[in-house]
Image (cartoon, rainbow, N blue to C red; front, side, top):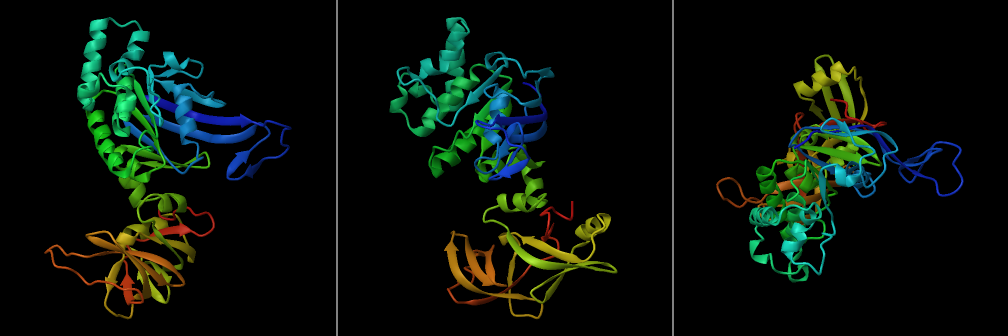
Length: 391
């Protein structure tokens, strides 16, 4: 059990050749005289036994951050503290952490029992204690019957359980997990997510978990850290980042299907704000209007975000937006409609069965539909910076 604090942590990979003379960006990462900045001014306080998930696209710096906490990557600037102790120069083996890798990293010539026991044997733990801890870990993870098998005789999910077992027998203060489920198929990923949630409830450890899968992040994390190009975009609970994304990147990254974005006009009126879109005006709800006023926002062009599940299909009416169904993706209890509207693709989630079990209207390509959404579900972003105007 431990608190983990990252203070102004930076990771710079030095130039391999001649030094650059000016600060710029290569691809999406900042380049300075010192080198390529893979992680930029990372700050995070992790509470004891908290489950933190670092999420973002490939190359955003999340695995590099995890490896710095583990001691596998050198820190260029800043401090990492575990239980109040600065560990910048502490060897990985002395940090009281354990790490689960994407590739499992099991010893193929050893049995499951020996793989799990290996770190305890290195520490010269008494044999009876090793047996007890291995059996406890195997029971927690449901792999007792596989203890005498070799890794090659196990499925991917079983191998990952063994890798997790090897980590938890050490009873580490911090358990680091680097995309542990990415090699599994969709069904196994779902099962293993549930197993990790159960595991978290049974062991007294602080978790740091890295993934590019936002579904994993939303279901596992107490808080999630969303990263892009080495920079933290937002830190919050899954519900907070879903309901109140800090910017366009977070809004588009969190949520399946992705949020719809529209070019719109925000108009300040005497009693609040309205949004003008496609000749239709929609009043901004009171809470968001209050935030806009507090932030001193005037009438301006904006990027408007609306999640597919927050759009309502309606009958014909004056204050309706209109579109043409291009594709319908049947998902069982709902259908994801791809609609051409306002010169772009708009995704709308429509229920196929109502709460009484009655089948709703079916949809076909070329069908004309009308839709709308309320002022309470609109997300209003600055067109230039991409930042939310209601935070």
